[in-house]
Each structure stands twice: as structure tokens, then as C-alpha cells.
Length: 314
Image (cartoon, rainbow, N blue to C red; front, side):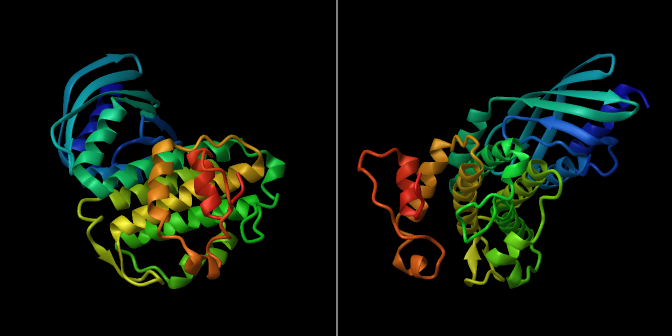
């Protein structure tokens, strides 16, 4: 199959099959990069495409250029709940009849702004995606010997803390997708003791986080009430908020314990502060969910103040 025919199957999946890439020849080790999410496996990309495709109202290829095994396309698409048309350039590289690499280029800030304005609670999902990428980048930098170091979280190691975070996002993803999830899977100790990261922790975390964000971004999810969570029925918007808190804070726990950089997203920090300022108090501390509040200077940086409120010393 020649290059244009392979790429044609890819765009047919977006145009006619709601992002179902099951019939598209993607290399198992596909590397796909974009301004909002990136992937390093075909499985992760297919999962994202299925979720995103369900929200696509229209998709067309406006122009296309090819050079050997590389095809560049200018694409337009409409996607719920966003108004108007989004335009992007996409580069796909084909080898031996399979797509091995892709890159999507567009104005991500414009998209994030549109999502926040149109979706309201959906802004949390945008921030979740951005914060998850910060965590994944930190996981890529964890030295081999640091995975067994103490994390400062419930006597967990760095890897167990990362596993708790990933396991929680996975459980919430499955819940938001409509699956019945056993209450035990929301137990922090169960999550910390269950290996969902495998031998490629950063890649596995990216896939889980994108699955979670994709499920929470689906039309109607923010307003929908979900049962099966141990704390009782919960709206999708609340789940998104909890996932954002977990990602920003436990991401810091892991990075801080492993001694790697953690440039927390400033907008996400503000959103988590708004979510936890009144939502985390003595009741939550008595239950062991958060440590005692640490006093910091009124002029301390916002992230330092947030961490102190949640019982962490920056």
C-alpha cells in the first residue's frame, strides 16, 4: 500500500468512522506529538481517537502535500462542545505500509480558551491534561534508584505513590466511561499496591491520564451524576476536580521525593487552590486524607501555599 493510501485510511477513520482507528495501519511504536497530548504507542493513540472522535461534528482535509514517505495535510474540524472550526497542520510519516510518526500543529491556547469559555467545568479537564504532561515529564526523569525511595505519602515509595495516582485516574476513567468499578479500586492502598505502570511508567501514565481526560471531556459528562464511588454519587465535574487535585499534588510528591524538576502549571495551581481552599478542612485531615496544615508566609508563592494547606512542606 503506497503512502497516500495509508494516510487516506487514517483520515477516513476521522471523517467516516468517528475516530475508530482499528482498520488503520498504525505501527505499534507510533510516536504522535501534539500541543495538548502526545503518545508513544498505537494503543494509546487509538484510545484517544475513539474518545475524541465521538465528539467530532465535522472533519475535512482541505489541502494535502506529500514528499516520499511524508504527508502534510491542512485539516479543519468541528468538535463538541467548541464553537466554530479548528484548523491544524498534521504531518504523518509512513514506513513499510504503516504510520510510524505523526505531529499535529495548531494554536493550543486558542483551543484551551475556547474550551474554557464553552465548557465551563470542562476547563478542569484542560488543566488536567496539561498537569498530567508535567507529571509524565517528571516520571521520565526519575533515576532508576529513586523509584524505591520514600515518597512522604503514607509510607509509600516513589513508585507506589505514582501507582496510586495512576490507579486513581484509571478507576475514574472507567467510572466516567460507564463501567461498574469495584469500590476496592478506589482504595489508596489498593492503588499503591497494584502495578499499572509496567516497565514504561511515563508512557503508561500518559495513556491512563489521557483516557481519564478523554472520558471526562465527553459531552454531558460534567453534568452527569455517577454512582459507584465510595463517597456516594458524584458529578462528572467533581470527578474532574478530584483528578486535577490528585495529579497536581501527587505529581509533586513523586517529583519532590525523586529529586526531579516539577514546574507545576500556574493555572492548574490556582484551580486546585479554589477547589481545596474550602473543600479540605479538619474533617478531611482527621480521616487521614491530608496532613495538618503548615504555616507559611502570606507572601509565599501560590504553589507553596497550596502544598502547605494540604500538609506538605515545599
